[in-house]
Amino acid sequence: MFPKKLYHWLPLWAGSVCLAPALAPLGQAQEAAPPPKPRILLVEDKSALREFEVDAVKVAEMVAEGLKRLTGRPSAAAAWLTLVTPADTVGIKVNSGPGPIGGTRKPVVDAVVRGLLEARLAPDRIIIWDQSLASLRAAGYDGLAKRHGVRLAGSQDAGWDESVAYESPIVGTLVSGDLGFERGGEKSSRKSHLSRLLTGEMTRIISICPLINHNRAGVSGHLVGLVDGSMDNSRRFGTSASILAVSVPEILALEDAEQRRLLGDRLVLSITDALFCQYLGQSKCLLHYTAALGQLRFSTDPVALDVFSIEELQRQRERFEVDFSPPDSALYRNAALIQLGESDPARRELVEIFR
Image (tube, one colour):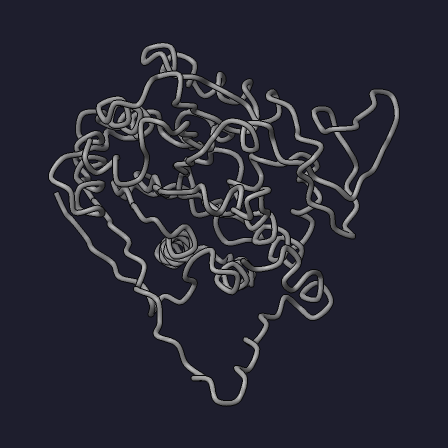
């Protein structure tokens, strides 16, 4: 396994550089066979859109088709069982902050929950989660959870695990909900703690995120969203692109006692909800900066999927002649260095299905 501090904070002072691999000893082969190309499965059905609403039946068909084609299985239930087992506790990570229209759309999550139930997962082993229960309820997920008998959980509400912390020189001011926060006093910390949801309950994670711009990382996608939703004292990471480029991959590579990555190794599927694409803004729903795509994108490689999303966001800004371009973040190259996924667009395979 790679060490937790593979390249530590050098990128902060050197402009987020990527490290070259160490030279192999004399007598050993210098080149290894490249890993297989990550696969992105894109399903498009523009008839699933009704202004800023979606057709739940057609979305469910898109989810089933994407899963079957991605896994090569004849049924959606069989496809799910290549990713999870009935013994797993599966956390479905959503982005509820932008609300029911701009955030992860409920029909996509509904289709995923139905698929897991058809694959014989018990309802109490399925958790729809984000940073806070309040945000999930405001986005309308409580009704979906009750309808299927699955759980709704906020990482903040579940509490933070003091034994699993990410420490860095960057100081953050603690706010309500952070471990160690004291009302009436200002306290800072260099530590961020992982939620007990991740350290004590979930064995597999499915990330479903909407296609929304991020001003520093390029996309509010699977990597940034998973870290932001899992840690306390996380506001300190967003102060610069350089800090994000280091902290996000390192947190995704945090290991448990068995030397398995608590986040990176549990993420078995990423789905980009590209039914709509918001090419400006990063946390609020801004419909005047939103384009209808009618797409869902599936991959087991979150890095490749996020890079693909950044390219789409730039295409939409060029299409609408929007003069904005986020910095070229080293986050995805750093993530590739520690084998979280593939950041090179030339090293991916894209399969498109038009319905």
